[in-house]
Length: 550
Image: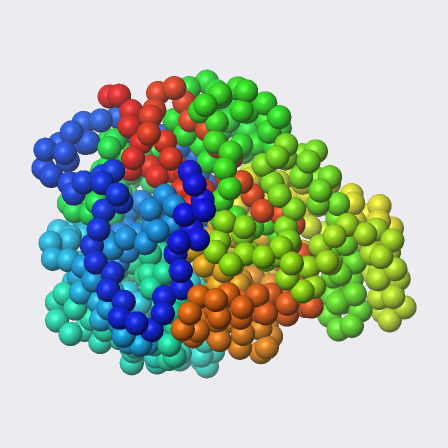
């Protein structure tokens, strides 16, 4: 896949924008009843995954285990093709002439799997619910609505509730308008992300029950609540009422929640799973020879780091800044990526991804990412002179995700360079790991990986480091950083937007709320039983395209 195609998604200017319905270059066609009959009789595709951290509600899901399922069972206004280009899906058109007020017209005939029609109010009601501060504990993606006029989702007053944003208005069954608090040329790019999916009326009757048996409008569906066997697997059936361009070419999707990447890879070699999107580090040296042309190793919009909680007093103030710099400079990224990852990782030069338009390897301050053990020890000594270090530096990670080897390498590099106690802190499962992070009960530094939601530099910055953003797990806050992100989003041309996002990164390099490590390739593979396997721009297989004989 040619990831250079991502560069063609330029920031939208203030001229009239009209996204009209289109297919992905003719590779797929609109579903017909005959095609639906053929796909439902085809074989089910099996893949790897992890137990979702939260109930299956789009605005409550910001981790990859649940995200893989959510994206399979819901369809939004737009979708992203394999190269990251935006295509209309439920939207017939999205129009603006000022990048602040958008008129959305829906295609008629879309249905949820309970038989109710997808109407304008299903989008508006879903977004209002996600933005309501009364739902803040559940709606982890509420940050994405922050730009809409009338957003009050950060209101922490007890009992606070803002059930409707003033910037959303239903015009008729198939039309609604979106008014932003300020112009934002990046906004249309974000509309394919799951936070912006619609919700059926039944959701609002009992959100908790809905999360266990969601009703979507996407390519696949959860036919029965029993098809989700928690901590084991989830089986998704083809949705016969789906009317979009991404027609399923198979009979469904079985996602197994493997305890480790090694187990998934062993099943792939044995022919017991069709496609996996993660290769264990133990197989990096051999998987391409093991699988031949069925091996996948390509750039993806994935960034890896570790985050230091703002609550850790040892990393606050002047001494804390010196220690953050020392930690970064004590890590030999080149050696770790060469020895452990066999060409499947690239040492980070910034906080984003090289496959995104506007990326730069020369952001001011990025020299802190260079391995310099002498300078690191000097900085640590300066910090100790201000406030002596106490305790052990711990780096938490989920043991079911293939992270132990690199965590051990990083903490050993820190230990040997700085002369302090350092150790990995394993969690058995990703769900347990994320629960402690989102509940703010974790006291150690912790690994953080970001898979882009939409193809923009801003998507690597705002959601992770903007004050109160939904994925800002370290609780970082900087007025200067926030202002630069806002200026980038409000820019009328792509060059200005990129300039502001790079300036925002300068602030991140000064404060180091997270320590960048490396960019990930997507590594995966598929069995001899399947064909037409394509991994998209942000590392997810396009499951609907995969074919398998019945």
